[in-house]
Picture 1 (spheres, helix red, strand yellow):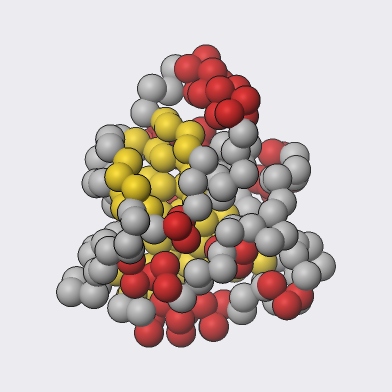
Picture 2: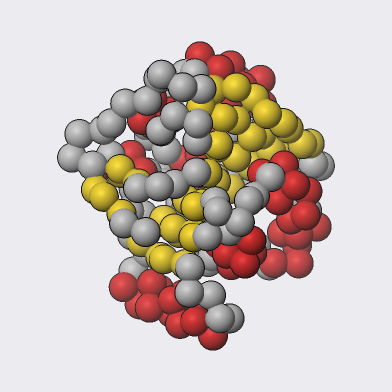
Amino acid sequence: MHAFHHRHAVDDKVREHLIPLAQVIGLMNIKRDDVIVDVGAGNGYYTFKFAPLCAKVYALDVSYTDEEIEELTKRAFSLGLSNVEFIRADVCDGLKLANYTHLFFSNSYHDLHCQEEVLDNFKENVRVTLVEFKLDSPLGPPHFKKIGKEMLIERFTRHGFKLLGSLDFQYHYALTFQKEGGTSKTLNNGVMISP
């Protein structure tokens, strides 16, 4: 999944300055019964912010070690969050997630080797929010890994998603889509994650 994996080394205050959390949460329109999948969750920054607002958060990262999962789980417990699960998984390997309502990618979609294929495998009516680097941003991955906002909108639309909203920040943009009915498929060898 992550050819240029970055371990979210950005300080949380810098991240909040670059990508204002309240605006992202507003764009996502999180509901109490939402089950959010934080893809490429890294240090759990967004996972811990979403958990008090929804029913469940699955934090997926292909590079989690057992020790990191244990450490993050202890942190969730210390924060009183019992609705968080950290999982070493690659969304490109055909994850079949039970009962999820929202997928969230923060600077991680551009690392997927299955960018097109994965879109056909998200269930109907799911919302997907992506935060990505602008093409002209001096931050982030090499230029050839970045995905322009218009290209991402075209790609998601072509795969049966409707754009619900967008935000522009200095170095990033954020988009929220919803998968329209009748286009869901299931990946082979899917792994079931139970709530």
